[in-house]
Image 1 (cartoon, rainbow, N blue to C red):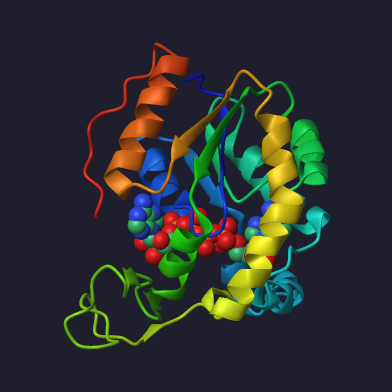
Image 2 (cartoon, helix red, strand yellow):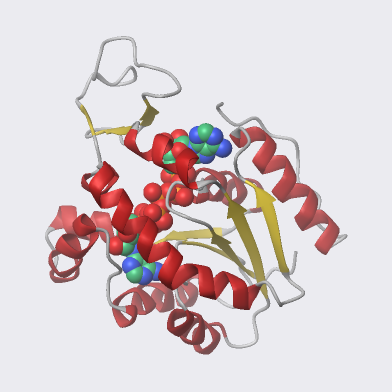
Length: 229
Ligand code: AP5
């Protein structure tokens, strides 16, 4: 992988972009950016950006393109010209793809689409909880914490993301179909696009992404790592 590449993770809500992105950033030494995560942090801090974004996120719509593009611009700038960047959650529509073209300059794009069925992601997201203190993620459909809804690691309360409630999920998935699917169709024409089967356990998804990245660039060698199942 060229060290000025921009890797873009695509896929529906709950596809596993965050899970895979975190591991890929670690093993490939990439600068990660999850636009959703940054927006949630800003909302927690109560900044002007966070206040503007919070209500939009809680109803499952997209935050204005210019706001998220500014977050991406800052991260690409911070990374510097010779550090690869991993984008999770940007771009999400065709206008954002145009903005990324402007922001990235000559950097090559690598486009990874994690394909997952709607019923699978619904189950994942309605079962997701996070620890209010340490941020650890649980999935009640896969494994339950030892003491009900209390974090095994630090004992703090586990809560559900507002936008993981089923009614909001339906909006997020509709937005994905209307805004992101056309983007994925356009990106699928590019030679640096590939798709993986995200219906599998996290480890198998990671191995599929790794082998596709290695195939795309013979200089890349991704070490075997273990992801939580
Ligand atoms: P964001 O936080 O990006 O939400 P999302 O894209 O809907 O993605 P998620 O974080 O819910 O899922 P994911 O694909 O990362 O999966 P994860 O690994 O977490 O954005 C939130 C909001 O911010 C948006 O709705 C919008 O309002 C705003 N926003 C963000 N970017 C924007 C942009 N560019 N433009 C405008 N607005 C923007 O996994 C999900 C769950 O499944 C976890 O519990 C995990 O443990 C589990 N899991 C993961 N992989 C697997 C697997 N293979 N098998 C079983 N379980 C799995």
